Amino acid sequence: MVKKLNWQAYCGDDRHKAIEEIKAAISNNDGCIMNFNLFSDLALSLSIEIEENRINDLFTSLNNFLKLSEINAEIINPTSKKEWLIFLNISFSQGTGKLQIEIPSVPG
Image (cartoon, rainbow, N blue to C red; front, side):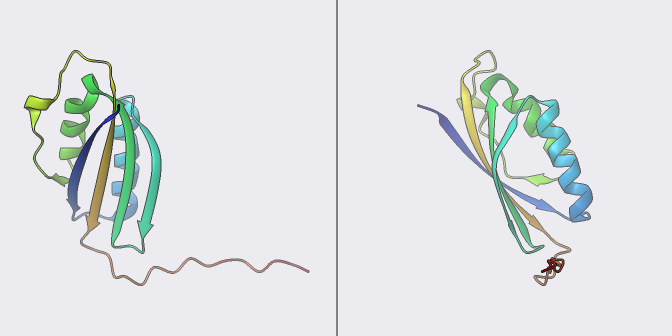
């Protein structure tokens, strides 16, 4: 059975810049984004699959530019290669709740 972690994060920086940094941190730690949900420009929810021995490094990388909830290091085995699922919920302080995505007209 896959073990799971729930992380809460807060970001005070630009959302676009933060998302690129988040993607890089996950990729650099051999993680994989399995699912994502964007809630206007206020929040982002990610499901990340990662080996157990990379969780602490991912946490450290993300904590450089996000304010993350604490991690219980005692439950993580730094030598294990078991797959874990991390649910990461990020709130963006600069969001307005009025994100609009323009859809181009389709000819015809």
